[in-house]
Length: 166
Image (cartoon, rainbow, N blue to C red; front, top):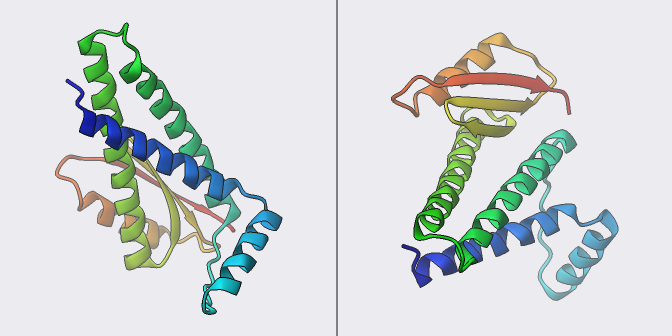
């Protein structure tokens, strides 16, 4: 059974997802104007973030897929003609999407902290695909990353690590 609190959570989650995709897809000129306006109003803060455009494109593609799935499940939740079982299945699928995203972020954070690599992680059932932004293609690093990720799980996962030049 879907209650109001869960429906609000799903709605706010989708809104945050849409806004984050909008932010990522902003053109450089629009983003520059926004940054200039914010800097005029606040104290100067220096942030230097560089990330591979390949990783950004993978994240955008993944976010678009998640957004499409989220919208489909929300349509089912809000459709009065759908049965209770269909709505429960849609809700459970939304929660699974949220959990998968949290798992991917946890793995990316672990890779960043332990190995200092920018990465993109995609989890699909027992398969975990990791794309690293690095010019070095080191088998020892890949094996260490695989072991580190596997240590998070009790069950055997099929983990692939791919190195991509920036």
